[in-house]
Amino acid sequence: MITVAPQAAVKMKEYMRARGKEGKCLRIWLKGLGCRTAYGMAFDEFRPGDVRVESEGLAIVLDPLSAEFLRGSHLVWVEGSGGPGGFALTLPGPDSGGTAPEGTEKLPTGS
Image 1 (tube, rainbow, N blue to C red):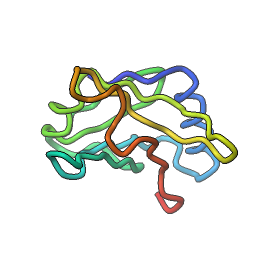
Image 2: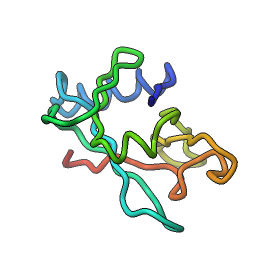
Image 3: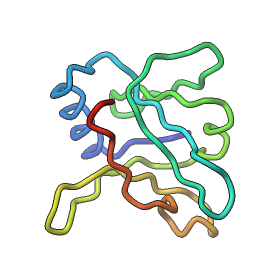
Image 4: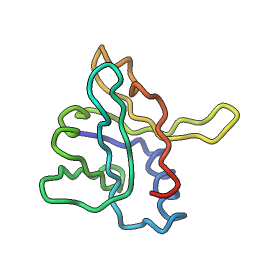
């Protein structure tokens, strides 16, 4: 399933604490399928039918379709060049190019 790099876990927990989201799960989902497949992230609760994963002390929830497509992914923290960093998923497989098609995904401030 999805794993989390230690640095990404630390950064995500800091992000959650700063926004009063401690105790929430990180929801990751696919946005579209095909050539422009991307993903989204937000803080949420576990819902019936979700797949729940724990990695590096971080609870991640996914809908079943997203869980299938994101199997083997790794959540990492990417330092920004001249700006703030962000979170990205590295995806397995030869046709993924190693990272999600949309690159670094930053969580919306309102999550």
